[in-house]
Image (tube, rainbow over all chains, first blue to last red):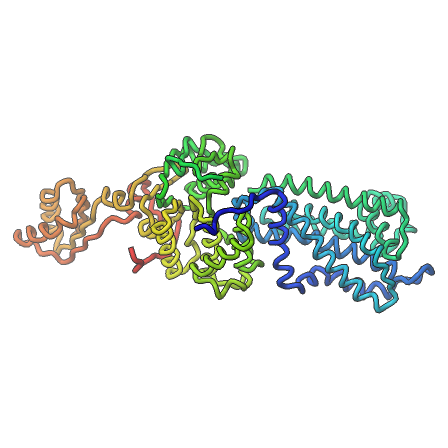
Length: 256
Length: 334
């Protein structure tokens, strides 16, 4: 059985790559699956955008689209733990825990995978909006994607941690996920601007990392590059990624 | 990593695991001492909650022992977790293959986790798909496979790296009788052809009896018997049941039976006599001839070997079937 001789020494990088590509296989085999997580954002886009007042400094869509991208990312990444929840119930999570794959790779590989559906979804949103009054500024969008990538990795890791803690109690996962997602969206000014908001709401909004992410992504989508706003967005998404990975790794190492 | 030469493939000493549930301590496994040599095929038999699965989960690094030690393939299950995981194959109670995945993808991914190159992993996946008769289902989502196909895929995933030890946790639970027999056949063939050390848990007596060289009976977290299935059964002896025409005849039959079959335990209930003794099946013909000569007419005669269920009843005072309603395996090849 010479074919069974391991020719490669698995490392954290190869393990993480293995876990990430495993997670992506169902996505690539059925690309339409990325649409499921976007139904709600697309409905919001269709129903909200026509209601937006013309702010006078460019089309309403130009303001709204980055918010919808952030919403899609937040929803997709926060849903992702549901897949792990299912694998915990059916048994494949247990099989992976007994395999030589490191606990770190089982979490990091999964979290990194979130970047791919995020990119696919953003491409769909842009493709849908470009025929209307939305101008595509590719350089800005690509930089915005870097910020969104770190954010999606962090939220994805938190979602996996929540799934691991819920341990097959689906209601716990969905209650926490649903309770958190909408306040985060509203407080970030994704659907409505918070310009006229009362002080306490502004204060909560200032604590929300998504606020900085969205504020950085908006000018980037419009092709302008205010360095302080972009820096704040990068920092906020990097903090979310760091926090998510730290919490996620703790949960994965305790998993049995 | 070179395979180490180990005297015992599995060695546990005082292996213990407690769980805390509702502020109560449950002693799932209590001081287990177990040695399994390379190449053995061992069944852990016991009712639900006996501690079989917890033992298996400790041996496969899924839960840490509360106290005591366990070595698998020479590696400590707490200190050398990665080495243990590289040495074993594990088929859990659930499906190893993710339900959204395709079967072949899962095999390749598992093989890559063991360090096989892309080409070698692909070749190994195809080889296993062929061996488990899954080639034509390799590209389907696992959720669309039948229960039997999914279970075969799970076993195939557990065998990807030709492990030195294969653990199967209740491999045939939920399978219909035909698939269960097929699975047992595959496990036996693997053991015969590759010499793989195999440890499986089951609460099906027929399965332990049909499949394993050695049966370790576990109840309330301790080993209550450990022997070959044949030895466990023959220790209890055969059961000869005689139905007689009258109670008076039964009294006579019970007396003659006790005298003719040394060491027999004899019970009489009305006109029925039950006689249990080692090799009683061989003595049955002599008893019948003797009773006929005495003028006692026998209406009914039944000779049965002890089953593992009888063994379990004898050891624990409870029937295994009281807690489990297991479909039987009548007609299964022994």
